[in-house]
Image (cartoon, rainbow, N blue to C red):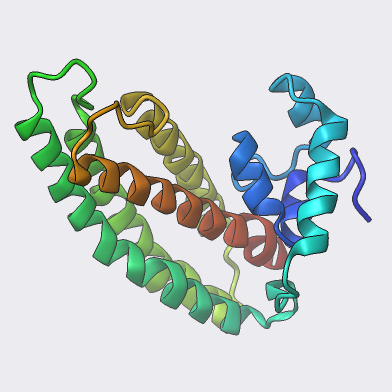
Length: 216
């Protein structure tokens, strides 16, 4: 049941289209998934009634989807790798190259996202190490049923860092809004960065709010 006391993480698990609504409002349902909807709305000065109404409306219109909550942990891990890890490894180098082109070709424009390419290079390095640690250490432990509390807490702390990195991307890009007259590459870059943000938030949400609690 959807209530103001439900945590945003639980709503993202159980309510169709909730994660899309949360992204629209800038609500962190992955790293901040343990907080209640009422608490988050109060902090962000959002109208709780309006958010609940939008959740109800979007969920009613959403197509039924298979619940990942019901999948076995091993199957969920394989889904995370295929749906999120592999695409991330392919997407980040392309985004970095696009950011470098935009910064170089539009260096004289006030709205150019200065520092974005360097930030994306750091994000790519940190995420690469993070994904490798999950696949080589944590995921095999979870599949074998071994004790994984220590590695899980390390990964969750790194997830917090990834959330901060996403916020920095927003800060460097005027909230991912290209300026009037921006070239096609500039606009495509911001669109793909928004898609990256959504995918990474969904990725962290699946681990923080579904996979990891099972082992803890």
